[in-house]
Amino acid sequence: MIESFALWNDPQNAGQGVNSFTLLAANDAAFTSPTVLGSYSAADGLGNANFAQVFSFMPTAASYVRVQIDSNHGSTFVTGISEAAFEVSAVPEPEAYALMLAGLGLVGWAARRRRKAH
Image 1 (cartoon, rainbow, N blue to C red):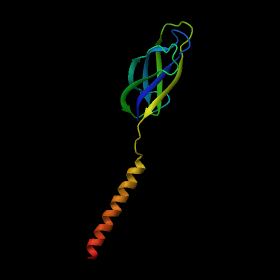
Image 2 (cartoon, rainbow, N blue to C red):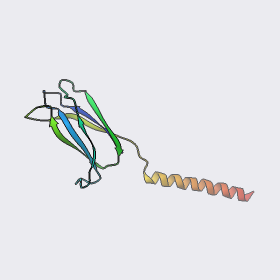
Image 3 (tube, rainbow, N blue to C red):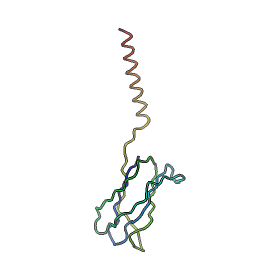
Image 4 (spheres, rainbow, N blue to C red):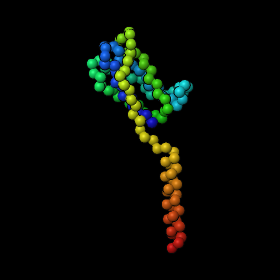
């Protein structure tokens, strides 16, 4: 599950950083049925390479994410970012649930057998 996106905008020249963008998520690389995570506006990163901006959205299960850049801060030459990252929340795998249920079943079976023996 992804639940937020961190963006470090391009700090090199005025206007190069991403201004508005849309985040899309999908479970297939072709994005045949994407989920729109949201549309956002970012501050220009001019002069501050360590300026992280965090954009949150509803936790979403996805294998692929697309950042659709809709505009920059005015450059007619280039648009850039320094870094991007996603916050991922841990989701237990189905195997973990199966093992937990099997363990609980074994404990219940042992307790029942113990009661019958007395």
